[in-house]
Length: 76
Image 1 (cartoon, rainbow, N blue to C red):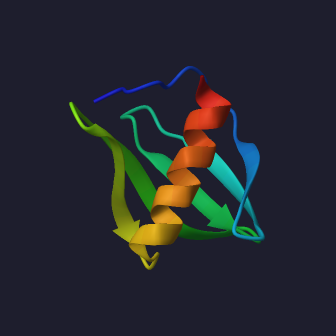
Image 2: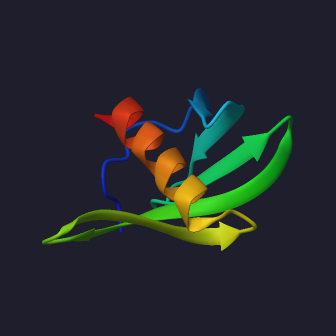
C-alpha cells in the first residue's frame, strides 16, 4: 500500500532527540536508520480514525508514532 510516497531518496528527521535517516521503500514501507544502523521498518495504516504507524523493529509504539508523524510531515 502506497500511502504518500513520492521519492526514494533518503532524508533526515528528528524524533524525541534522535537524529534519524528515513529511506522510503517501493512497497510503502519506510526503513529507519540511526547512526547508519537500521532500527525499524514502519508503514502507515490509514483508517477513518486517522493514520497509525506500525512496523517491525525494536521501537516503542510511542516512538514509532512520533517517527511516523515526522515522516508524514516530510512527505506531504
